[in-house]
Image (cartoon, rainbow, N blue to C red; front, top):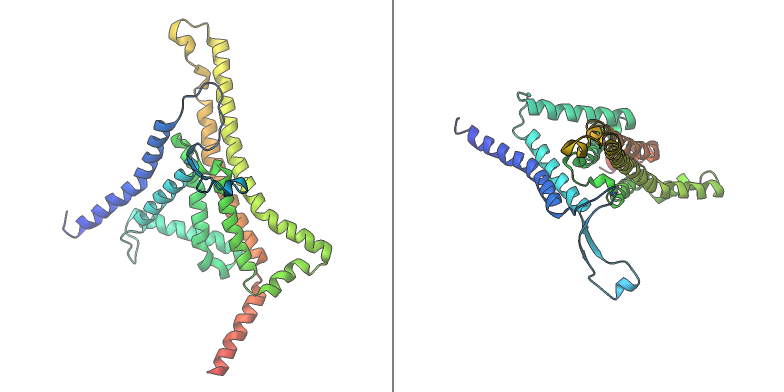
Length: 307
């Protein structure tokens, strides 16, 4: 190994550890803190820490600081994704000569093509990174369940935070041409329709959050119920087998794994795609492109005349 390649290999090792160690941490933390379970147990995020910083305000507002495994796993996923991005983009060259650079370029091309197809060329440069972040965070958060830990997308507060952030982005793009243009999008068709438009605007983050959370959480519930049913059915049909054989849930072999692949891989990736698609459609549908171009072209002409 040459002296030139040693620092590069050392950085690669550190970035790989940055990808892997957060996942190992999530698994170890879950093993050390998970309580013993018997029968069918369907529960939400486990609370690791809860504190009330101000007892007087707690009588009026809920001011408890709560730390759950959904929040911890979300941060671990973000650290792991950051390590993956740094690893794929480390040592980039003008012409792709490594597999990881080809993968990085393929991801960029696919995301830019997705944004171009749904939002147009105008938004490609400014929105591709955001859409890629939404896709990556949602997919990897759902895949955490494959490691036996709580998936952040199964917690409504986590997905609700994403939906609120997306709603702020949507509102910012709608209001980019001034408050008058933004208000006119609600009131242009009359008072009755304006009230419905306001309700629909408020319902946007709520529907996005519940759609994502509901589909991911329902998959986890179905998988647990099917696994418990197969365990009961195995004890009924095969419990007569002698010794330890009668205690082995043979009917649980295979089907729960298939369901896990569907709900964790396919359904998780599908919900991430739908969430990002709705984000792009809401932004492009509410963005006053013609008014924006008109204002900027007028401002450019005014600056040229002033010069």
